[in-house]
Length: 175
Ligand SMILES: [Zn+2]
Image (cartoon, rainbow, N blue to C red; front, side):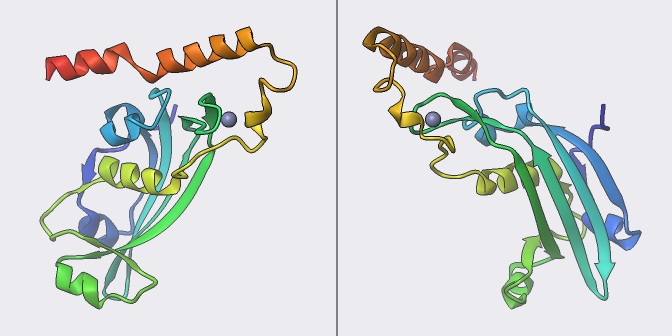
């Protein structure tokens, strides 16, 4: 079982000492990602390498996860293996961010502010997932080839039921 990562860190202090953090983050706390996932019991394996390069404070990160999302063609679940690497440069102000070279992605964070690792990873995963996910095989021909109409309609019903999660409705009532 990998170590649970801290929720928030001071990236400047960690970069100063060249710290590497390795561990997992639960997707269960990531609300926006939760809307995309069919199973939110997802552990996201992350590696964060904080380092100082000259006067630049950098973060190199790698995210590995196997989210289960919905195919937009057949509406069935599909596993979308994710292995995403990204590099950020920490800057303290928006003006500094605008002056950055194009190839470096700035992360604006004041020196005394803490970086929310969970938010960062959630954003990166949402950006990495396709906006129209679909199975690699042609799942649309199912139903025409071999399956009877009855089977197809029962499958559709299941998909409809899965679309409405009674727990998420309860959550909304509570808040
Ligand atoms: Zn499909």
